[in-house]
Image (cartoon, rainbow, N blue to C red):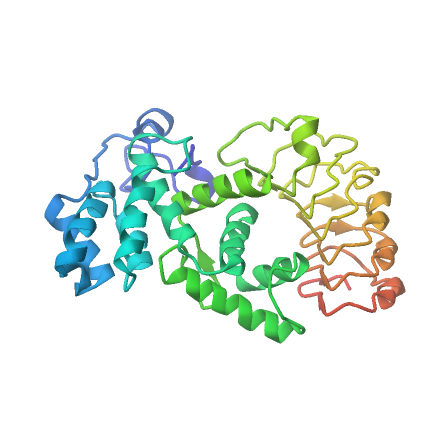
Length: 371
């Protein structure tokens, strides 16, 4: 948990004299449990001791760490992990079967982490996740991890849509090829535990610590602006100079009273707003976003669509899932559109202008029950 959880809202009755309900909550901050949730009893889960930490590290990295050359370096790396499983597991898997010089370089990275905005045990966990990220092979795999982090997606289908829109996948021509590539990349990120298993192979999860690191790296290296309203109650927009170099804006579970009339982001390729049906989108909002490649509006009231949407001549992926829609004829102006998803949206007719989208490779109309 990061913040207050409304127990009644998720179907858990409040305590009373006849209640026999017990709820187990976990959080990284004791303040969340003691002060915000008013928990009656708190138990601290201690870090692993030296023997336990070494045993877990050896299990993940293999018997090679008993090698006389590696053992001293491995011992120092385990020490840097400070008994935290979230640090030990990805580092051990990242270094498994690597050369001695790579182990020594990894130790130096852990001793001098690049992400400076964290402290204490948090800094230890974050620096080890960053190390695992640095050991990922190739730009495609690294950018996939960052995209999953800042977009908050958790299924292969969304990764396919966004990845194709951002030209993330190399040498891909069809949706089938893209789906196979997305599944392969997800599996590769599961190997070092940067992603976790979902209910099926089509779904996955990301640990909060890994997501925080991914967002930090994306913000630092790609000028991505991210707000998750489960954590941040109010949005403070970057100044104009920072917006001008911004490549992506992701507003997850947003609770925004209004958007700026215009967002001058000439380099932005990704824009996502989710879960705020009361938010009104200004008609001129896309005037300065001509490089936009992926646009995602989820659970919003879009009657009508913003008139400036027709200016997005480079848009590759448009997602309007679970939205209330009126006339969507303007979508016919998006000649480069390859993916259009209207899953669960409220609309009564499918306009003929969609037939003008000659580059379209994927159209999702599932759960559009009024069509």
